[in-house]
Every structure is written in C-alpha cells, then in structure tokens.
Length: 482
Image (cartoon, rainbow, N blue to C red; front, side, top):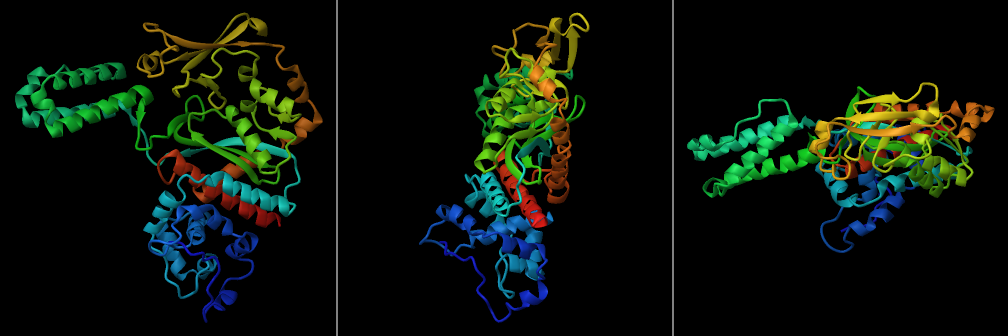
C-alpha cells in the first residue's frame, strides 16, 4: 500500500538541517532544483493503493539509488551512510531521528517497481526540460559517440565450458554404472571447437540410447545441461551468466565483453539521448534514434558532430532530408553508395573491420585491384570459417563446405563530393573542435559514477544503471552552469 510522502514531517530536530547542511551542499542544490514528485506519478501504478503493508515512498527509494550513483557506493553503504550523514537524510526527506530502510529493499525496488519502466528516456527528458527552461541549452548541435561498459560477469571460452560439462556428465554416469566407460566415444584432444561440439553430440546420443542410464534424474539433469551448453555455444561461442552481454571491439586486437551506451550531447555538455545495446553493435546505425530522441526532448538540431562511424549512406540521406549538417570525417568504407547485405554486416570503426549478424569480426582484410584507381578497387574482409561452420545464423550466409568466408565492398574515388567539400569549410573545422567534450563526458560517467562496469546482469538493468548515471551527470552539469 502506498501513501504519498514527499515532504519532511518536521520534528523538533528539523532545524538541525539549517545548521549542518549548507546552502552550497550538492544535495541541497539538487533538492532545490528539481521536484521529484514525477517519480511518484510514474510509479503510482506499480503499487496497490489500499492493500498490503505500508510501502516506502518511491521518491525516497529513487533518491537512495541516485545517492548510490553520485557517490559510487553499494546498497549497504548508502543505507549505512544515511544513518549518520545529515546531508543524506535531508536529501531523503527524513527527520533527523528517523530510522533507515533495510538495504534489501533497494533490490526489491529495482526489480519490482522500476521493471518495465522507461527510466532512461524519462530521466533524460526531465533534465533536458529543466536545462531548456533555465536557458542553459543555446546551441543547435548534438555531439554523438558510444562508450562501452564491461559486463559484471566475464565470459568463458566455449570449448572449456563444453569440456567441463561433458566431464561432469561422464562422472555422474560412472557413479551409477562404472562399466559404461566402454560405450563412451573417444574424447577430443584437439583445441578445435567444431570437434568438441561433435564429441559432445555423440556423447549425448550414446547416453540417450541407454534408457537405464539416461532416465536417472541426476544423469538426466547433467545431460540437459550439456545439451543447453551445446546450443548456446553454436549461437554465441562465448558463455556467461550475463546472457545479454556480447563481445565488442575497441580495435582490431582489443575487445571487451559487455554493453555499449550510445550518447547524444549538446555543446553545453547536457546529454539529450541515450541508447543501450549489447557490445557488438556498431555506432552508426544508432544515429537516427539518438537524433529522434533528442528532437523529442525539445532540442532543435541543425548540426551533428561525430566520427567517421556516422557517415553511412542512410545517415547522410536522413540528415540531408532534415537540412542537418554532419561534422564527421567521411569514412569511405562505410559511406560508399551501394553495399551488399548492408543489414547483415556492420562496420566497426575502432577495429576497421566488418562484424557479421552473429557478432563475429573479420580476422583480416585485403585490398584488390589496381593501385591509385579507386573505382577498380575492392576491399575484402575475411572471417574465421571455423566459426561460420557451427554458427546458428549460417543459413544464407555461409555455403556448406566452403574454405573461406569473405565480405567485399567497392571503393569509389568520387564518393560523396558534397560531404568532402563540406569538410574543408571553416564551419566544419570550428564545430569539429567540440567533439572532445563527449569523450570527457564518457570519462566522467566511467571514472566518477561507476559506469565502467555493470552492477547487475541483463540489458534492462544496464539501461537502469545508465538512466541514473546520466541523470546524475546532467543534474551536476545544470547546477554548474547555473
């Protein structure tokens, strides 16, 4: 049951706040800046109005999460600090003598109350609206970029997990029928994933063909676990507790396992839009969403500042239709006019490689054709054919028995002359100087607000973490500019 509770119920000790929490205190400034009742309105339908135990105020619970992000502390630590830190109690609308919540309540609040809530867009919209009302946002440019966040759980090599689970299955079988060793297939000793998968499938088949063994509950449990692992391996090649996280690439030789947050930000360093994806997704395809969300949040955009990842054909077409200038160095590889299977292969500008739908990156590239004659040249990207052989998405992409898998793009010397000419203008050169600002903002999110690593599993929780971190940095920026 929920009863609205958004103001301090003043006690005889409330005057302590005026003595202990100064006017320049960050939390006092945030409380003065924003009316948090919008949280109550947003979450009202998640509570029963007339049944059950009295619930903590959703505003207070949200403020606890905001404190966690501002000061980068755990659930336990933020609750403990709110017992003795008067600025925390003031911010939480508590009386000085009030008791604090149980830390486990924060987990329940995240899972039960914030679930299925578009918190990311809600909080960004709120801060952008405040910035516009205060006259802080004056520019008509947005700067776009993506930052990566490591998963809470590191991935394991698929072949190692397969071997561990097949070993567990064999051990369980032998505990009931030692003599069944004679019926087991020969183990794979090569470091070859395809051979290991074949061995596991044969192991499954032989055990299933012996009902007296496969019907034993303990064996059946381990058998199903191995089957599930084989299916996951054929699709992902890496296994982790974080099912939504994927491997992305920061360069041709450097990768990470986790998520990407695609950001749009004004020249005043107010974040206007964010989209959270798994780590393997490219930057360029998210530009239309970032632009649309920024515009929906009230930003009048006439210029987009970014890097070469955003100069794809569809992005340039979209911005030209809206008379928006793109301040980004043209990347010939992704901007060329026609590309086969454009929806299946995405360009990773950091690694200078294409990535297939399954998330696998090309292992090398080669240019073919006459040198210095752009129209006759083709850039060919080579993929690891061993991964293609066992990929669940190979139909229509990989031809059975092929020894190679390549993807080629033609290179055109007369490509996008309009954009190339724009790159030489004084306007382009002046606006390009602002791009560093978003890299500094990414650094602030990671180093100050704990956005370098996910605090929970799944893309929904990553979106929630991103929402509160961006809300915090936007509020701090607004206060600084005021």
